[in-house]
Length: 114
Image (tube, rainbow, N blue to C red; front, side, top):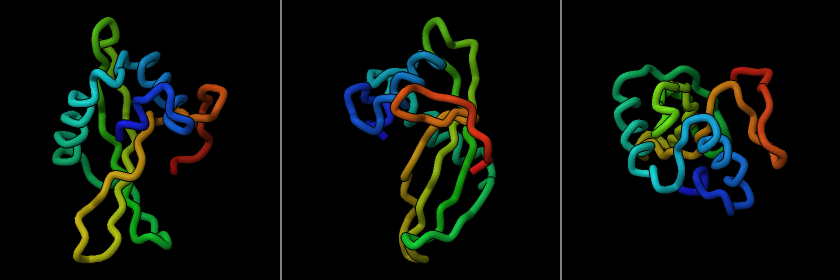
């Protein structure tokens, strides 16, 4: 998950800038974000399941409150969990803010729900 908050990471940089711009969450807030995710998975249902070559991918939409000046914002964070086989625990493989599609030039609206 740290790459999603690392502005210098090749893939995570656009996500990190989005987290900061939209929710005021930076790499310094990683413990806060982790706590929000771990609390959220206990409260929200699995929204979608997709079979992949790596196992099942389960999507959970977790509401996350912003930090600092953006603490009045609550945005759904899409989390994707991989279950490689029946004996494997779920593993967080992706996170991004709902309705935002992260690209190398910032973000734009996402058309589909996956």
